[in-house]
Image (cartoon, rainbow, N blue to C red; front, top):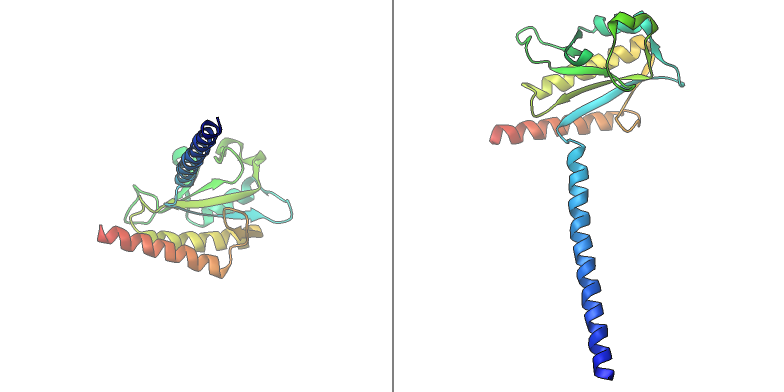
Length: 178
């Protein structure tokens, strides 16, 4: 009886150990899927209104247009370079859901901020895209009295800008090797 009891305990211990390994392996897969959904190829930042204010109306539209952005596909704004009017260098959406702009109702439109972004995997010049996106974000922040933030709403510091630049450079180097 005592041997059967010990064998039973051993089987239970092996089963528990197996379940723990299965859970750890599946948790790792779930984490990988969640990280993949974050899309590491997207470079994005925000220009947010200060003190719970909002960017609004035709002043917002004028500031956006003055940076060279053009309204277009998906009802958002896109930045094109003169020698490539087909593929935008980067895009700008409202930071308020659903992210699009309704130009017919711009007089009553407001949003808490703007999101500037581009996809490293489709950009024809990621370094130029980042440089011009940063310049545009700085101009919008100045014109609208806003603040440049990372996507997690932390302040966009020089250190974070350097990290983004390194990410762009690493991606471009890896792409050139492939």
